[in-house]
Image: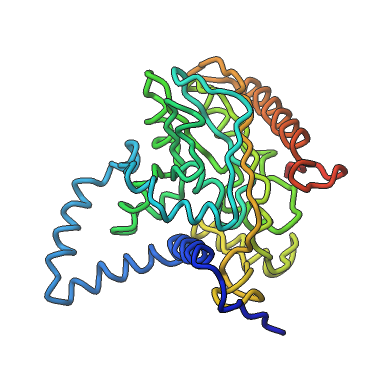
Length: 335
């Protein structure tokens, strides 16, 4: 395979953008493992007290992730996230104002490989979420597994990440003062196995838990489509029924995380690596769908609202797709 090397005359700004995206990829793929390794290695050094004290703190602080986490506005506004934003670039576009006296459940689509748009838009201030939606605080849901990694859990909480279970989401939605938005990548890790350029299929047809959650707490549903999320990586072909897909699905059920075999560009060459392609991501926040609170919704009520949600999401996609280079004859498919 021919390797195309990057020019040595790359401007400093682009180098900083690449460095920012490199640390972000590392954060998602290896930082948790590094933190776990560090925690145990310190126990066998003269710095063993660091791990012991952290273990005590961890025990005391165990419930914090499921009780809204511990965000840091200072870290969310860090310059590194602006370089990350400009690498692609990423834009957050609103279609209407959101009432800060109400709570919301944001449905984010598609998941993509590493949910770049979801993280940058809702866990940092790089795209100006607070300016676009004043009075709204977003909480992005992430697999509970990652909150069991020492040190790493504290890092991800600074961005407003909380575990992706009903208890954590319900805790923040119970805040009756309003202004809370739970952001759910509805397709989850399983959807990442279909994330590749041009893909328009969403794992949504039987995903109704987030609908029930919204009804139970009277939180308006907001469909979000992130154009370009699937364009960042190529992925090894893994059609349904193939041996690779079968292994991936079994591992996903066993471990709770998907393992897509993805690739894009490298740090010093553009032909192969784990750094995402420089392709624009445009995240469109749709209009809220009013929800009537019902602590015990019926199956029919959930199904009716789910059908309406899929309709509004499709309308959002159709309205904006030609602006972001999606062919007019391409439509969303729900699986």
